[in-house]
Length: 332
Ligand SMILES: [Zn+2]
Image 1 (cartoon, rainbow, N blue to C red):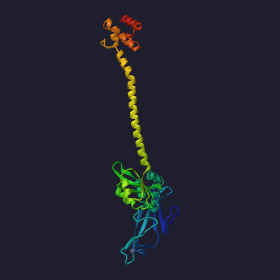
Image 2: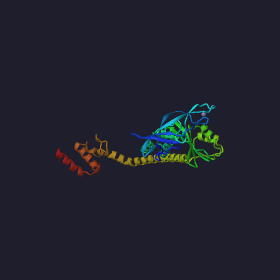
Image 3: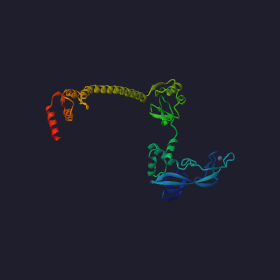
Image 4: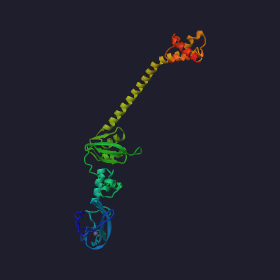
């Protein structure tokens, strides 16, 4: 079976068999070039020693997973000066040596990982017909080459937590492009200073208000101007305003409490003075009637009712109390 446009292959490869399985497609492919070059001496050889099969994951076809059964040949190297006697043919545009997936499949997984930032990428890949795992997505992203550092004039530096409260690293940001340019494994001044020495054009270092990065900038980029970054300035301002407001709020509540106490104190004293004493004779009401003898049970009851009604028996308002006293005696 020859090549099919549904599954394009590099020049010199052909499809020998396609099987439909429960999980997708199993496609047998092999290379057809009569010769292959030795990876050590680059001499072409047509002496085939044998072959073996590799199982590779490939890009999905019609939403179905594709598994390639690649037949790989082994050649003799006929160069007498070469140290390698047997080599495996290379397919540099299709699959890396020892890889378990094709290069185009790896590129698609990398794209999914970059687009989803590793979150949900596994579920999306499964829906697209690719079997992968979250560690594989993250590993593909981590394997990407670092972009060239280039010239940085304005640098932002701060720490970040690798493990909250335990281990910290340093993040370095190009303030012109707003991109992270590097991550350092710790937040020591020597480490950051060694990194800054690679940037002789550095003009401004924006940092926190701690001493480590100030020392790092002084050692690694003495020509640069140091300034406090906006985040830490606003953080300090917020903390200062919160402290000031808390102080004023506490003072205001204290004054309010004192004013409330002073306003309620005269009322409390007058109520206490007007309250009849259970033993009689200790309150003003008892003293007002002390001349006519000790209080009787009915009088104490009448006095309590008069207080609850807002009338003081000592003030001479006895008409209602007499009626109440007579009613109590009739009931008894
Ligand atoms: Zn060789």
